[in-house]
Amino acid sequence: MMNDTSNTPIPFLEALRRIEALTLRIQRERLAAFETVEETYAEMQSLRLVLVARVAALRSATG
Image (cartoon, rainbow, N blue to C red; front, side):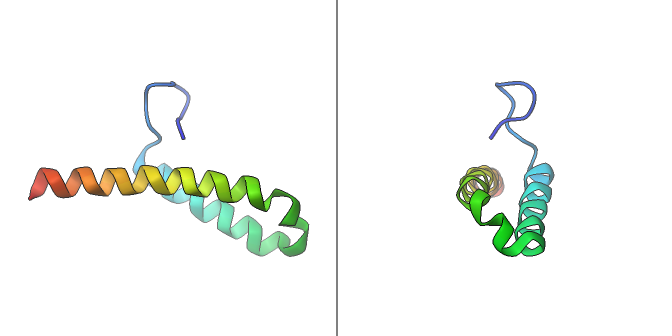
């Protein structure tokens, strides 16, 4: 997942906020969200990979 420049990864907090927004949308729309769940899940997986990579980088830099 990238932001407006193709070489810049999405910022950590922006990724967290996006995951929260997607989760809230699924909770709010319930069955109506079913048609977009696969797309939403794929986006959340992509965001999760960003977060995992950032945490790993922080861990390696500090330890």
